[in-house]
Amino acid sequence: MRITVLAGGVGAARFLRGLRRAAPEAEVTVIGNTGDDITLFGLRVSPDLDTVMYTLGGGINEDQGWGRETETHRIRAELAAYGASPDWFTLGDKDFATHIRRSQLLADGEPLSAVTEALCRRWQPGVRLLPMSDDPVETHVVLDGPGGPRVVHFQEWWVRMHAETPAAQIIASGAERARPAPGVLDAIGAADVVLFPPSNPVVSIGTILAVPGIRAAVAAKTVVGVSPIIGGSPVRGMADACLAAIGVDTSAAAVAAHYGPDLIDGWLVDDQDKSAGDDPALAGIEVRALPLLMRDLPATTAIARAALDLALELT
Amino acid sequence: MRITVLAGGVGAARFLRGLRRAAPEAEVTVIGNTGDDITLFGLRVSPDLDTVMYTLGGGINEDQGWGRETETHRIRAELAAYGASPDWFTLGDKDFATHIRRSQLLADGEPLSAVTEALCRRWQPGVRLLPMSDDPVETHVVLDGPGGPRVVHFQEWWVRMHAETPAAQIIASGAERARPAPGVLDAIGAADVVLFPPSNPVVSIGTILAVPGIRAAVAAKTVVGVSPIIGGSPVRGMADACLAAIGVDTSAAAVAAHYGPDLIDGWLVDDQDKSAGDDPALAGIEVRALPLLMRDLPATTAIARAALDLALELT
Image (cartoon, rainbow over all chains, first blue to last red; front, top):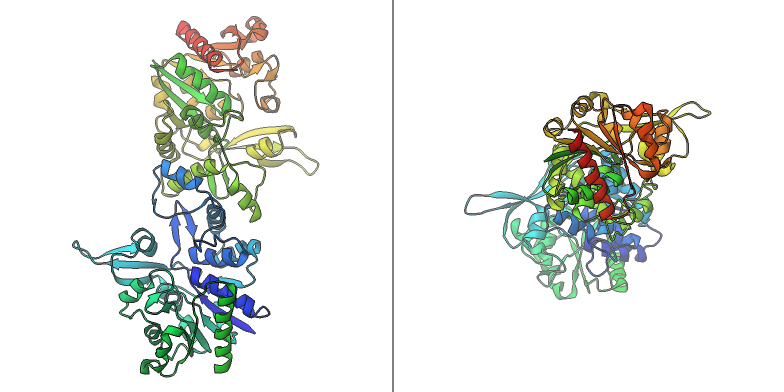
């Protein structure tokens, strides 16, 4: 079986761990969001790709969900001593090495897809990990203020400001000119099933879908999504702040309706959101309720298996 | 008093520590060799500038003479796990931060002189540290072999090969097109005294002198050098291998004769090399003998004081 997954960071990475357990024989291609990518201290950081790579490769910090295990923070302290900014983005020492290597290969002229493949040769994540695009796409957040609107990088809004200032708009800058990375459209076209893990529908999956060609390719397939919202709250992160920016309620049903029946065919919600199945806005989307908290690997494997079962049923 | 010093790495840095003690009120400008600079893992490394900066700023690894104190080597191990090369150049984690910061500022368009000034704002070395040039100069070593001559970067010959393969030629590539960094010629011109610490006469001081304009500016001043050779052996490093490449004997007298009376006015040798003062090849160079091993700060201070005393006497 060929499975293609559109992935953000922590939620996607954990889901993928369950998926590999649920379908160990499947060929899994992961299309990772790169809209969160940022250049820090002259080094290129791809948080979502790294979270997937580290999680599946056994190098993740399990407690925080991102970054490397048993980290130290000497480089960061040194850079602060040099007065380098920003000071609000935490990068551990081992993580820095990944960004040094990525930046070196990019400076040598390798596209991000080839760089990601090179990094994955070490980590052996057991999936094929592709960036959504080799072209630069940066998620920007427009904030209204007394002095007029201003634009910040998504990471600044998310990490430094904790998304506390409401976003007036979220823009995947450059997406309209970006081309899907080599292999992306083929992996979607060849997939038996496309899955949306419980990733952020706006700044993760939404950004991937904003790359011209990807949405149409996905829409042509059997697609099952896992709700990132349980009982009116994001399972993780601040997806509610992103949904508010695009005028979508923070509910499992509203997210499914936002994707729409043209895009997704099946939708997994938590037991407490079972009523979403009766929502007329979700006509044409098959809704299944089950425990959706990825509290451990068995629970996550059960969710992945349910997504696959529903997809096969809908094919 | 204004003192300008041409500096390589470890020997110069230790000498400078003595000089600051010997002449605490002096305005000291240090012109650092950048021919050893190398790009590793996409990051720009300036070993000699850093050794001076760390040593005078209190951040040096005292035992090895270069690199940072209390280092760890996590980044290096990570890069090796990614298959990044080379594996023969040791950079500690805290040291990496310096190279990240330097590379970031260079990528932002700052010249190396401005970058060095920015890094020194943290270290407060108590001297003004200038790179010899903002233009790229790389010391290359020509090696003869059965397959014909080949060229390696100085660091590869020095660090990886331990200078065991004889150098057929040592070339400061790019030096002929390099311009002295802003402030370099002024600092020499304004100096009451120019000093050569016991640095490598070929790949440290020789490289600095190869930048057009510097040799003539230095030759016009009162110059006192400290022999890097004691009793026929380099005090540190493998200067003999470099001297052999340019056909100069490994002796205190031969190095002074190599500089020549047009360039230097005074020359400090170790007591055991006292006879250099009788060498007819050193006519026109005032030779003084004293204990020249920089075994601790008092000994080093005495050497610096002797160099200054001789310079003032010759002015």
